[in-house]
Length: 221
Image (cartoon, rainbow, N blue to C red; front, side):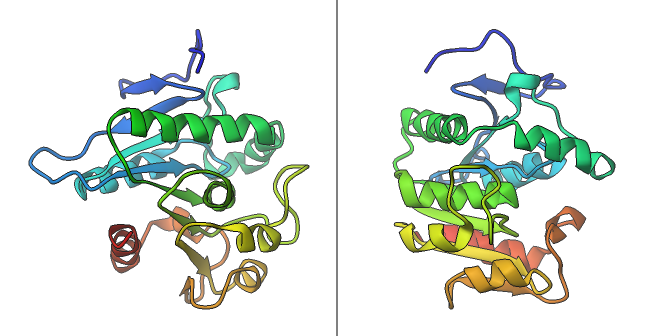
């Protein structure tokens, strides 16, 4: 993979570059290493949420990375008040570039000696995690509030309901009860339904019991 001459402002955080620069969290000292996870951000970018998920995974003994998918424009992160701006940024992304960025993150983890790599994503990242489970060498995929039901986020890619039958790894969907399109697209028995929640519910914080369910799923593959 080529290296870039620029990257996002990292605010003192450790950032490595592959196809896209990576936010990296090492497994906690003294914890048995249990594999690696690529965390795929939502439309807002690598926010505190994505970083916190990487930290939680590292605490559980996983080497966790989150690629800055907006890196070509400086790797911006947005807040919820800037959702319309963030969506325009998302629409500029191209499927082939995203595929290279995800593959680069997986290659980085495998280059670190991690034999089993999972992917976990939120909203657009949940769609991408599902795509990765269908097309790349991953051990498992978690899609939290995945987008793409009815129509993929980007031209040239299939909608979520057509992508899911192609998945080749264990897949877990974590979907809000008030997100009927995503619920209808997901296979029976592979979904945790969050009562009363709408799309994007995770931005309000991930319930500890829900996190335990995700962690247990990842630990079982």
